Amino acid sequence: MTIDALIDKQDSFEIVRDRIAAILATEVASQMQLATAAGKDPSDWKLRIFSERSNPWEQFLDATGDQSPVINVWYESSVFPPGKSNLSERQTSETTYNIDCIGFGISKDGGGAGHLPGDRAAAFEVHRALRLVRNILMASDYAYLGLKGTVGHRWPQSVTVFQPQLDGSSIQKIDGARIALKVSFNEFSPQATPSTLELLSVDVFRAEDGEILLEADYDYPAP
Image (cartoon, rainbow, N blue to C red):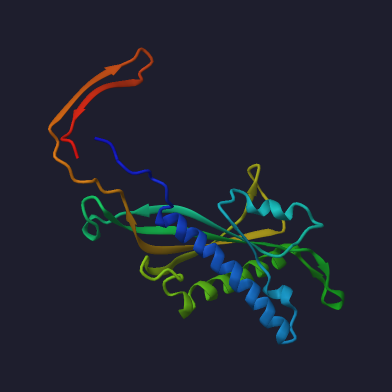
């Protein structure tokens, strides 16, 4: 017996990941508009949002480009508590998404205040990005990440500072921090169309290269 329907859908873990990135992009744009309306510099609220990037800090290697903090949303892992699921159709998932905040700092002459080091500026840029990301995702508007009925809850598990690496070495004047966001939701799997099985005959053969070859006879009652 094989699954009788094409698996042509996204799983919930993909939908939630994309939703997190979309929320951040939408709210960052809104915050910049609010800053402009308040007579403030909107660039202080600017973040660049990516997902599933392995080296998002590469955005800073071109010093002539946009140096706003980079946010990278990526899926890490899921666990499926059996007591919260059923045997086949619904699997409750406790999933962790990492939201990396990467900041770049430029050393400056502070005039009478002395030298302003780039690594310190990078740390402050990361802290600014963390502040915005946490406040956006934990706002009451997003208690269910805009997916009520799919998402059961979301909660920040931890924040960890890290030093981005390039070719095994730390990158100067670039700093990072990671928010681990735990999200609970349901995954669903295809269900069989009920039928009465009259005959099932399967012979299993193994080719010389190890490939499994099947010869099968199925005899079902006519619909």
